Length: 169
Image 1 (spheres, rainbow, N blue to C red):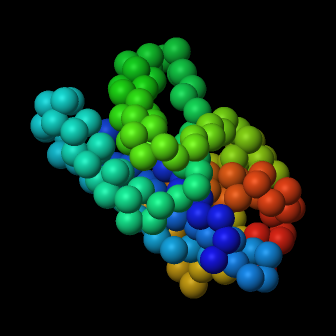
Image 2 (image 1 turned 180 degrees about the vertical axis):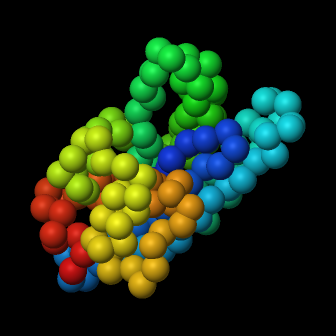
């Protein structure tokens, strides 16, 4: 097994995660993928504590060399969303830092462009592209999982300098 990369799509209600490893054929294989869900009725501090606990458990189990996470972006129409996402992202970075895992950040448009050729791809387009690139039998659900897989794939490609077509081998 080669380099292990963990991709995370941060959220306070649902956080997607994916763990990929280089395989012997020059592609990547999915070691784990899923979501961490949090009760929206809980106070923010308790949701953040639950997020940290879940992410730390995933990182300890898989020991990735790199954690890849989406960069924050701000929609000025909803600045509160960006602030809340900053809290979640900060907790994720803290968990990685405590375990001395390298962190790389990627703009959402870069991830989308890498997988689909379109920096403004829809959630559905991303899910289909991830399914095809990884040769998955089913569409990755929910979209948070597809996003985490896409983030990890983008990072894995950067590390190997491989074009997208090589990742699905």
